[in-house]
Amino acid sequence: MKYLKIKSKGIIQPEAFTLIGASTKKGDETKRGFFGSGAKYSLSSLIKNGVKFKVFAGKDEIKFSTKKVSFRGQEFEVIQVNGQDTSLTTTMGGDDWNDSFSYIREIYSNALDEDDNTKLEVTKELEGEDGHTSYFIEYNKDVEDFHKNIYSYFCTENPNVLHSNSKGSIYPGETIRLFRKGILCYQDNNVRSLFNYNSPDFSINESRTLSDTWDGRYRVGLIWENCTDEILIKELLYGLEGGNAGTYEHSIYWSISPSFSEAWGNVVKDLKFVGLEHTEMFGRDEVKGRLRLPFDFLKKLRDSFKDIDILGLYDNADNFFTEVKSPKEVLINKVIDAVGLLLETNYRYRWDNPKIRYVKFDRDNVYGMALNGDILLSTKLDTYSVDEIARIIIEENEHNITGFKDETREFQDHLFKLYFEELKTGKK
Image 1: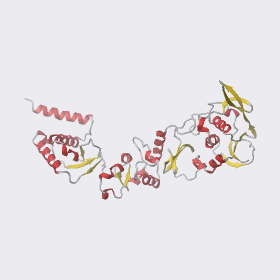
Image 2 (image 1 turned 90 degrees about the horizontal axis):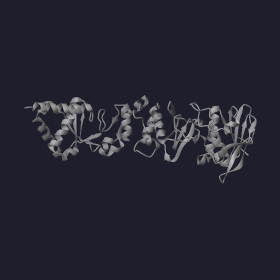
Image 3 (image 1 turned 135 degrees about the vertical axis):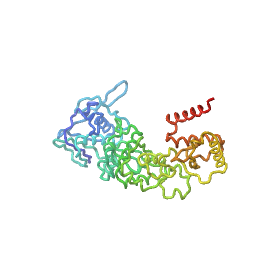
């Protein structure tokens, strides 16, 4: 019979299989395990699934057996270590521990924590070695499949790492696989992924599986923000182009205040973009040659790189818009009348004849905007009255004069001051 042999330096103690919660790894960030339950769960899983195995501490074999025990009308198999009863049963772990990867993952992870040079090999010899702990696991079909596809489970064995930084590593991918400290903690064969990711900071539960999918997407975002490989960054951008769903990377959570590496700046300065959601607002010639990417992602990039060329999004603009060259005549006439109305009042002293531009905003509740001394008016104002348009023009003109933003205390105080001063001029 063939076995998968997992050998590491150091001699395991029988108590590793009997003391629940007894872990010397807690608080040690270099270690892969910290719950103190993995060796017990793997032991239960091997026995429950009828997988033949042996464990040697040095040259001495640690022997495992079971005996039936009744408890409240139910029968359980209690695990014995070297003939001594434990409090462990073969029901431990549940469904998360029913496949070959679960018990091999745990055994191999514990071995790596003790010895970075832990060896995996197929053998027919069942013999321990001085100064080492050796596991021998029946080389059945499931174990063979695992062993032949080990890169899918332990990325540290994979030499094809594409990039590494302080936040993690990037590997080739087809469907999404996340690795914590080199060990698979999440996979979904139904989700396409441009890359796979390894991070020491993914949150896991006691079954060593990802415990927080949101945190996983956030940690992947940090890996990318710190990426210094310009070719890889371009590969990501072109992989995301033309969609806002379809790959795991479309669901990345970027930092609230992202800090993209200098390499990102070198890449985006030579590219032109348009928000995927806004493509239909422009003509074919306007979007030609531009990467169509999710607008929220483009805004995150602009937070780090103010000069990025995003069609319809300007450096100091708060809203997205596209300019309309030929607005309706009715709107033009109403704006002319509104300006004429203002020039008949004391407001004429605050009017410096700014340029008025007509635009389409992407948000329905935006009717005007101040930008670099110009006043931008929504084409939807064609149904508004002259008085309503005049009030909008006043607001945007005051934004230009003061530099104060919308919905700020400074701008509110400024408008009240203007109103109060105007009241005083009419005092009898």
